[in-house]
Image (cartoon, rainbow, N blue to C red; front, side):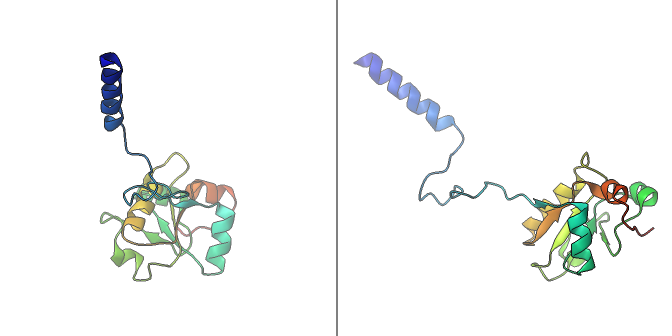
Length: 144
């Protein structure tokens, strides 16, 4: 009996040190179908081109000056600078569709900037993981 109680106590101690998992009715945990940390949707260069043509999206360039000089930017893109992602740059309309991009799939600047925008309350945030290299590779126009 003592052995069983000790094993039960050890198991309870182990469970109490594990990361929290979702529980029904627990407000601190994600509900079924939700993720713990919202991730921006991923879009392709073709989808971005169509949305920009319809003026349904604003592009946000997270590249540095060297990449911009080498590859250009999406036409009409907002350029992140030293201040980073700010409401002043992105504007007051937090429901406006935004697409962040950097150089390519290997770059983490766009996903990071997109998450910052989401933290500021922007709701329609996307990332074009192909980046400016994917855009240029698809033969789409750039601004220099």
